[in-house]
Amino acid sequence: MTRVFLIRHGEPQAAWGGAVDDPGLSQAGQAQAAGAARSLLTLGPLAIVSSPMRRCRETAAPYESETASPALVERRVGEVVAPAGVSDRRAWLRENFPWDAGAPRRRWRDVDPALRAWRDDVVGCALAFNQDTAVFSHFIAINALASVAMQSEETIVCVPGYASITEFEVRNGSLELVRLGESMIRGEVR
Image (cartoon, rainbow, N blue to C red):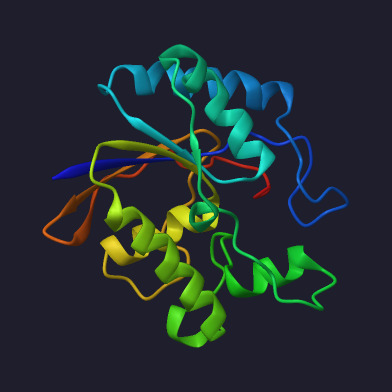
């Protein structure tokens, strides 16, 4: 059995899909990253993997510093990619992954096949870990793993808060959800 901890990045300075393509962390996000590092230190030695996005790299940094171990940067745990030609990434994200309370949910079978392939890459990456691992990633990637582990067809099955830690186990070639991280209480997915 391998434990996989998915850490959502801390609060960014700007929303993904807005004017800034790759925002770093806000001051609150930096504090959240430090808190996540403290929590991860209690879980034993963990390999470190991060999305290439700046907000994830900056969230991983305090844990990398505490453990004196660099993160492996892995594109397969990166942000979901909007198709070429999409000018309003925020609207596209909301259409395919509606997260607001009361919003009708989308099912994986109803989204573009490229999104299902992206989800399969995220899941395949997690299933390939052979040691306990901390993965610094994104809201939608955490949902991709959680939906598979929960055997749900919905694209959104949880609303992980900034720097929350969701725990999975890889057991006998399958992904099992151990516990969801803290939920986002309010605010915008950024």
